[in-house]
Image 1 (cartoon, one colour):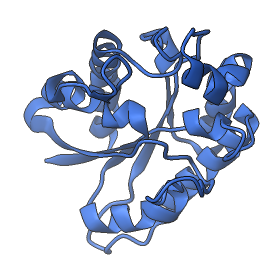
Image 2 (cartoon, one colour):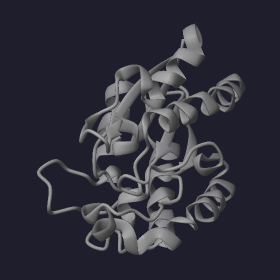
Image 3 (cartoon, rainbow, N blue to C red):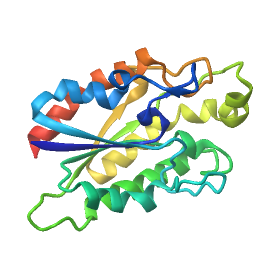
Length: 214
């Protein structure tokens, strides 16, 4: 059986902007992906609210720097056939990644490098990487959401281009989440239950195709 690692932030954790809690397990996109893959693969979920690609966030107790934590997670779950990255939203915060998609792209490069060069046990194959660009932000009346990421609405529209260039350079796969789902107007950057399910459903066939190449 193949192993798929979903590595992300609150969009992967399943944050529900309507309740301030978590989407039901069956509605989170990794759960929907797992259902679609069935017995072909097991899906491991590593989602952390606020996680960045490579940037520190001193405002939080957990380590949100994705690059620093990723090697430990890869070693813990090996063998890993595919790592699905859905990160970058929090890189657009001014106190972490600087607020530009360019920095998020730099961070994604580092994450892919870690996967492609990680010293897995010799009996295991090297992992593949699938970069998923986050959907674009939208205007919101929510005070916190507007202050936190309202400045980055236009910048979020550059995720797809930045990440597709990284995928081309590193020979990995790419998927634009914005083509199948949209962020909620409640806070402007999270996914509601319908849209997180849409993402999981849309990823089933691309992930199957990638695993078939291994």
